[in-house]
Image (spheres, rainbow, N blue to C red):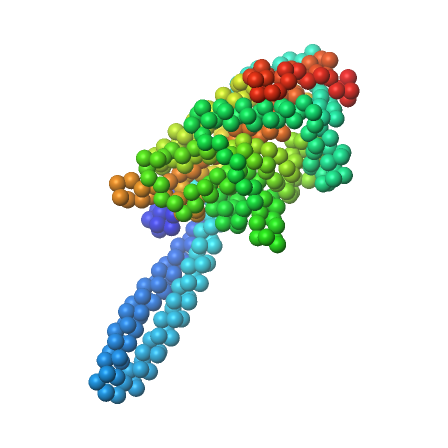
Length: 422
């Protein structure tokens, strides 16, 4: 959520920044400022009348004790009391409406976020192999180790069973990622994946991405689409001493996304599914450190991709494609030989004070407090990483060579050719 004080003090700057996302947002700022002015006026008048009400009440009480006739004064007091109640209710409704409008404004984009309309390619790392054969896709290479047919009978489309060596590969990826992140100062966490509405509101997924979220109405709970949601809420409502920052967490969890509106896109295999596992980085930092922390998270993502021998490129996401909470976002896109193009594999976002303001997370420094900054980034999106490993490690015989770095965590060095790949 944006700071209303900033909007009051710098309305034109806020309009210009939001206009980079969508020119229509400038009009919403005007509406918010008008509503804010009305709310402040009603609040100030109500508070003034409440003080007068208190004095009048004291005078009535004093008159009663002295035996004076307080009938007229009592009538005036009742009128003032009714006016105070009406103004207080008006102020309360105005504040609720104001907060609702503020909640729908996205974060201000960083000046260095790509202007668009296309993402900005920053660098290409790793050389895609020139295969002397027609590349197979991940389903052909995996064969029955990825069973989407049985999963469809069980759960419907966009689900899969992983079997055999791919299970060991997944567990190796997760252990590898958690150990690497631990070495970089992240505390491993296995968080809940069922959360209350406040957690999704706090991270900016509500009211923005309702169509993507699974909801359990009987329990007033939601399934998370990323452990970012649960990790952000670890310090909900807290004041953290500045000396304790940065706080860094590495969350491993299943993730659930309805993928509404994505019909017909990536329906083959496990690139875009309703349930997947992921290791996520999350940082709480002082405001002056968030830009540096963003680059640090990106560097860790690139370190992982390099060690996994996955060719990739880094892109600076265009402002128009940023999620509501992100001020700036980088994607790392993996090369997929079967498609002959780069596809999103990991992302990392600097959400500045947007999420922390919603979740009321502050830092204390020299007896004063301020809203801190939060950041998130994907370490391993397991399903998509498996796709990239299969396709980039494929051999002419249909087998797959896996990166040596994963062997100590239980992954096989090689996957034998599946019948469908022969």
